[in-house]
Structures are given as C-alpha cells and as structure tokens.
Image (cartoon, rainbow, N blue to C red; front, top):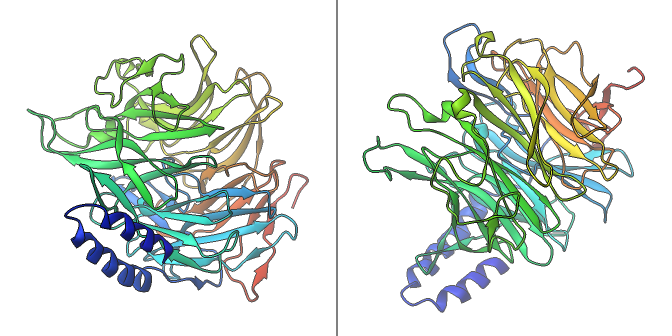
Amino acid sequence: MNQLNYQMSTIRNSVGACWLILILLVNASIAQSSSTLNRKETGYRGIWYSNEPSEDEYVYKYSGGLATYPANHYPFSVYAEAVNKTFFCYGGADPEGNTLYHMVSYFDHTTGLVPRPTLVLDKHTDNAHDNPVMNIDKEGFIWIFSTSNGTLRPSYIHKSTQPYDISEFEAVFVSKIEQGQTVPMDNFSYLQSWYQPNKGFINLFTHYQTGVIPGQPEKPRRTIGFMTSADGSSYGAWQDIARIGEGHYQTSGQSGNLLGTSFNFHPFVKEGNGLNYRTNLYYLQTDDFGESWANASGDPLTIPLKDVQNKALVRDYQSEGLLVYINDLEFDSHNRPVILYLTSKGYEAGPENGPRTWHTARFTGNDWEILPVTSSDNNYDMGSLYIDSQGTWRIIGPTDVGPQKFNTGGEMVLWTSLDQGRSWASSKLTRNSSHNHSYARKPVNANEGFYAFWADGHGRQKSVSSLYFSDRSGNVYRLPSQMDGQFAKPELIFGVHGN
C-alpha cells in the first residue's frame, strides 16, 4: 500500500481534490481484491484470438495463437543478469480459452527450468489487444502493465512484492497530471514500457480521441504519445507525439538513454476503417527523456506532428499505394536506428494483396537505406530484429508458409546478415507444424539461451495455443501445457542437430 500512501499525500496538496482520495481508497479495496489473483496455474496456455471476419476461405483478417501480440506492445520478456533469469509475461487463457489471463513467469538459465506461471489477473475479455507487457526496475521489482483495447475496459499496473520474484503482485494505484490536477489513470492502450535507471519509466502508448477534426466523420483517432514517471505510479501529463489522420501505430526501441519510435498513419476514409489503410513510415527519437524530439538526422521537431508530410517521414508509401506494418526497431553500434517492417497492397488476407515484402530501413548517418529481406503470406507475420555488438543482424519471424496458408504466422525462420541487411542467410526453426507460429518477440537485454518468445495456434478456427522460445543457435523449446510439479524442463521440439 506504499504507492497509495504516496499518492494520497500528493493529492492532499492539490486544492479541490479531496474527492480523489475517496476514489483511490475505494479503488484500493476493489482492485486489490477483484483484479489481483496471484494464483499458480498448472501449465502454459496462450490466448487464441481472431479479428474482422472476412467471409472467405481465410475466415479472418488475422487470427491464431496471439499470446505475444501485438507488435505495438513491448516488452514481453526481460533478462535479469543479477539472477540469471529471463522473466516473461503473456496473454494466457483459461482451460476453455474463453477469457484472457495476464500471466508471468521466468526461465532459469542456471537450472534450465520454468516454474508454474503466476496468474496475476483475469482481464474478462478474450481480446488479445489487452495483452500485458512488463518491465523490471533497478531494484529488481517486476512491473506488469495490463493494457486495454480502447476505453471500455480498465487498465491496471501491478508490481511484485519482492525483487525478482513472481510469487505475489500488488495493484499499483496510478495517477497522472491532467489540466494541472492529479487524477487517477486507469486506461491506456498499446503500451511500450522503457526504463532508464537514472530517471525511471518512459512509456509510449495510445489514447483515443473522437470527433476532433472539423469536417471529418466522427471516428476515434488513435493518438500516440508518451508519459514519464520516476516511481512507476505517479505520472506526469500525457504528451502527444503525433496525431495525423485517424491516428497511428507506433513501435519503439531504446539504446541507453536514446529512445526511438517508428510509426505509420491511418488516412481518413469516408467509409470503412482507416486502420485498414495504414501507410507511410516515420521515425522520431529523444535522448533526454522526452524533453525534446528530433528526426534521425538530429533536426529538432515540435510534437505532436500534425501533417502527413513532415521531417520525420522516412518513406512516402502512400504515394506508392502500399500499406505499412511495422515489426521492430533496433539500434546499431553507432546508435543509428534500423526499422523492420513489411509492405503489402491491401489489408485482406489472401494472395491477391501480395507480395508481403519484409524490409529494413537503416539510417546511415546521412539518409535511409531501405532494403528487402524476404516475403511472406500475411500482413500480420511479425518478427523481431537483433543487432549484436559484432554487427551481426538477425531476424526471427514466421516467414515460411505454415499449415494454414495466407493466415497469420507460419513456420519460424532465423535470418542472418553480416553486411547490414544487403544479403541474408536463413535456417528453419520450426517445420511440419500443425498450427501457425506467430509474433516472435525478443527480450530486453536478450540472453542467448532465451532469444525469442512466441505462441502458435490454428489460423482459421479456435484452437489450443502452446508457447515456445528459441535460443540464439536455433533450438526451439515448448513450455509445458500441464505440470505435475512446481518446476518443469521445457521440451526441446526442434533441435539444430535434430530432435
């Protein structure tokens, strides 16, 4: 309850905010009792989710085992060198797969074991847009950020009661500054949490605005922004990064104190969903905890960006008639950004909108070098980009055709480049699968023993969803769906030198 006491003392100093004290007291009782479960589950099960029925053979725009979805949520895992463990969270499910559980666990690199995962809360939806993300502060406390898709459901923040320990979490009662007043913060979407030990949390996110453009249809705009907090519970005012058209999806990365974000935009359309016409590629960065922002060349920019054509624009794909789906952002040894994304001709699943071309956009110091990597068969084929200290680039993603062709995901592949993306070599991580694998996610400070984390699921019908991780060499392990004891060894299912 330390967070509540701290916020109450802050609120007492705000004139006219006595009502907030009562709200927080009520929230303290309700949230801790009803949303914090701290229950050990008997195994690892992922959430299955589908979106936008298509009434064709592909059934959905995207679907499958989406425990580590979407690309705009990060991180799902963090390696903690102090205890030699990779902690991870994911969108879990009840045995029937009907409700989203926010789960947390770890892989112990010393023992090679995983414990029974901890169920932190039941999100009371099956919507994988509500998947959690996590972070670890300088004292080792684990933070779980429970997002919401839109404004109809609340968001939560939980913190472990002990450092590097998943046994018990407590609800954190969170505030922000709004119009100069301290108010509760119980809703945020598409969160990407970054932590800087000397300053605290800088979290990028989305919030929804409706009917804000004169003369345009009244539609919710997905405005991207950021917020900062020294302690994880008291946040400053939300600051918008961009609000162009119907909004944006952003995907970010951090190197030291340098934080970059890449994003597209949704043009206004008179009929239909502008989100289905996402296009263009933009990039912004800050090295002073959000005090100022610039493009990759260092040219200062005033946020929020409001014009389609601006100095953050990396490439004008709208003029080329192509859609843009951003996967990841990484920095090279010169602290220059590299963006991983794919382009396609349309939002519907199926061969007509191919090829879905994977690209890297690397800032050279003077301009952006954009190169193709490969192609795959669905817009939501998502992978992660790694750049090590020796300059080796790696991508892990579902670029091979899976058992449900043209649906989300496929067979996982490890791609390697020794020349900054000019040429690539590939090796299969999974093969002969019954379900599509999707959304391979890299940990913060990734250890070579737990290098990518993902789930699988049937692309066209609701199914069970297993969870997997791979090491840097390419061995793939499945987390146990049923555990008889308190710990278990993940099953090696695809080995570099055979099973």
